[in-house]
Length: 259
Image (cartoon, rainbow, N blue to C red; front, side, top):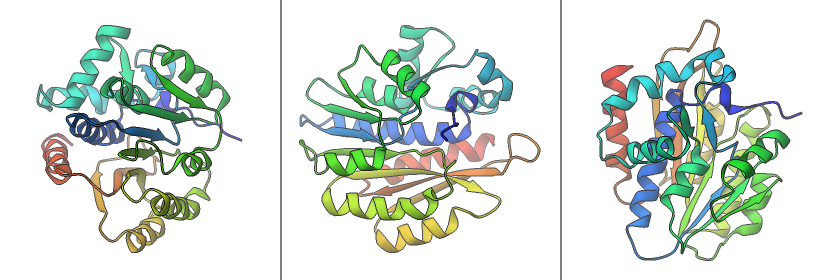
C-alpha cells in the first residue's frame, strides 16, 4: 500500500539540499546547445502549497526553505526557480523536482515522469499539464529501464523514493547498476535519508562498490520533532558533471552557517 505524500515534508531541509543540486545540474546542462533527457522515477505531485493544512501540520518548511532561502545567493538557479514558481502559482507555492526540471528544460529537451500513488499521479498531471511532459503511472525503475538508453542520450535521471517500502534499500543498488549499464553516459542522482537506524548504510556501501567514481554528499541536521528518525540527507551522483563538487561545497557552506 502506497501512503507517502510529500506535502507533509515539502520544503524541508532535505528538499533544499536535493533541489539546490538538481537546479544547478540542470542549469549547467541547459547551457550547452544540445538536447537532453530528464527521467524521474518517483515524481510526487510536482507542486506544493506550503500554506495547506498538511504542510502546516508538520511545519517542516519553516526550518527548511523559509530559513535557508535568504542565505542562498540571488542568482543561484534554485532561487530563480523558486521565484518563477511563486510568480506563476502564488506566494505559498513550492516546486517539487518535476517542476524545477520543467522550468529548467528547453523545447528541444524531453521529460519523463513516473508516479505510482494514484492521488499523487493525478495531482502531478494537473499541476504540470501546461508543460511538454510524458506522464506514466507505473513503477519508475521499470520505466527508466524501458527508456534507457534514451534519445537524446545526454541527460539526467533523478531517483527520489519515499523508502516507505523497506526493500528499496536492497533493490535500489540493483536498479542503479542496471540503468548505468544501459545508459553509461547518463547522470544518475539518488536521494536518500540518513537515519538513526543506519538502514541506509548497507545500500550506500553497495552503491559505492558498484560506482567507485560517483560522488556522495551528505548534510546533517537535528530531527524535525521528537522521535523523528531522519537526522540528515544524502545525494549519490553517478557521472557527476563538471562543477558538481563546487555546487556541493556551496550547499555545505549554507548548512554550516545556519543548521
